[in-house]
Length: 242
Image (tube, rainbow, N blue to C red; front, side, top):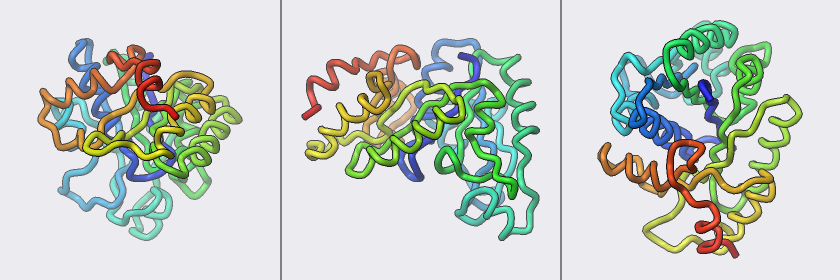
């Protein structure tokens, strides 16, 4: 795949870390990788945003990182544009820029803001619309904890209704310092049932604090072969699922 959308079932569930993990594996393979954050919210001018995290963990230079709009308020892009008085982002323009990047790179990763249906403009354009326009599959980052099944089911159903292909479901923050609780363990099997396929990965909690070399190893262990890693979904399920 030359373009991959990274979305999630909500905020603060590990989308940026998963994006960095996919980028790190792609960079290690060679061929070039670009990472796009169409709209960054909740960060002021000159402050490090999500792309800075990706750059640090995946070892990417500034030329590989592309942010097209920034809004200071921690809101959905459309609302953040409205409160700041700044123009909204045109996803048609984003689609064109992503296509241009795809002509020059083996992989282009597009990380959304919030979840799949967060609005980017007052007309209601969403990341799902961008994925459909690009014909790109979407990788869904999910929280392993209690409550994730409903959020993930709604995301997957919305994707299916809009004709967006599922690239897989990745657990954005799997506990390593403590045993996963019963809900997390049962969710392993139930998330696979919702997705109708094995998990595409489970990134360890705290991976964002690793140095680049350690992070690459975590990415290799935490993401499936389809994403460039060696994650064994069956072994993970056998170990943890209730």
